[in-house]
Image 1 (tube, rainbow over the protein chains, first blue to last red):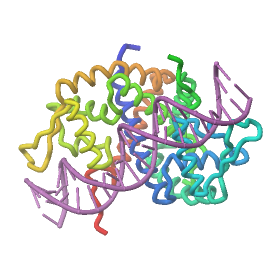
Image 2: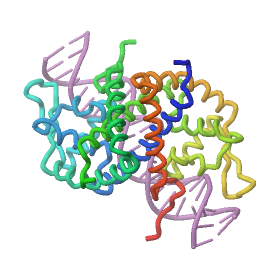
Image 3: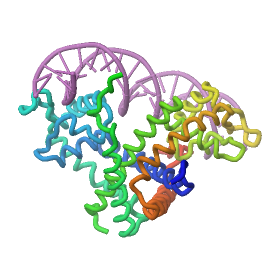
Image 4: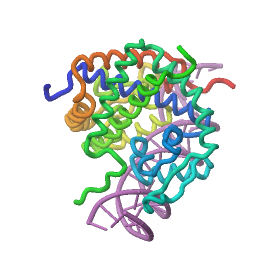
Amino acid sequence: MAESLEPEQLDTYFALMESVSLLHHAVEQQVRSAGGLSYIQFQLLARLAGAPDRRLTMTALADGVVYSRSGLTHQAGLLEKAGLITRAPSTEDQRATLVTITRDGLDRVATILPGHIVLVRDLLFAPLSGKDLRTLGDTMTRVRDHMRAQPPRSVATRKRQT
Amino acid sequence: MAESLEPEQLDTYFALMESVSLLHHAVEQQVRSAGGLSYIQFQLLARLAGAPDRRLTMTALADGVVYSRSGLTHQAGLLEKAGLITRAPSTEDQRATLVTITRDGLDRVATILPGHIVLVRDLLFAPLSGKDLRTLGDTMTRVRDHMRAQPPRSVATRKRQT
DNA sequence: TATTGTTATACTCTATAACTATA
DNA sequence: TATAGTTATAGAGTATAACAATA
């Protein structure tokens, strides 16, 4: 490896960032027009919908979606005010807040999901073969796991002492 | 193709979005701490640095980076106030504004770039083989071109008549 | 002493609509 | 009539620091 990115690496980096930027912009609009939510809010609900007992602690919920604690508190406040989640203190750890998705929250996800799936299929998967798909999934899973393993990544990371 | 996403497609979509989200967050911080710019501002400068004559019209500059005209005007205003670009009316088309990167702008890009490259290499490319890289580049280039070809994508797109 | 979560606050980004000017 | 760009403004997201409560 040299000290700079090969042209091939640079092209790959740019293609990746621009593709996902375009995809992000498109799904953001779909989620908002179909369900009146931001993509982040949709991701939080979708994560809760898939969780055991349909609930998670704030910290677990934030992981990978939101990068600051106050950001999550803000989003949770909005979702709670909209009746899509509830918050209650955990019995196991009195410090923790358990977030549970409501029936309305599940309905909202169900409303958004069909159009979301069509959009992602048309935009992301349409130009790919089955083999491309499997390879991309394998590659990005490896990348994600690698990034997750890097030192500072979670909301749980607090200030280092100066 | 069925009417829903295969589980494999869903996993791939999630892995892709989360990887890029983590990468985006990391590069955003690098660009800000190394050069005091947002990632968007860095992308705009980098695009200008690579353009013929180091200048572009506002519309050409926005393409793929910013999704509203006013957003670009805002960013250009910030970059101009920081002395990193200049704006001047085009002689060819009196409606157009030509944006040119200044010497300071080029220096700023040069200041940010080395650390940026190291970060992208460590975060994105470290877990990939040469073959993975080429395949990913090919795949995402195809995806990007496909998305770019979709109807509503550019800042140039104005309101449809109702 | 470290962790969970909230609050307050300030800053940035984004988007719409109204507007000017040129093609 | 359509396009390039700016302005004003309002809304949404984000982050830091200070804080309370629990482990």
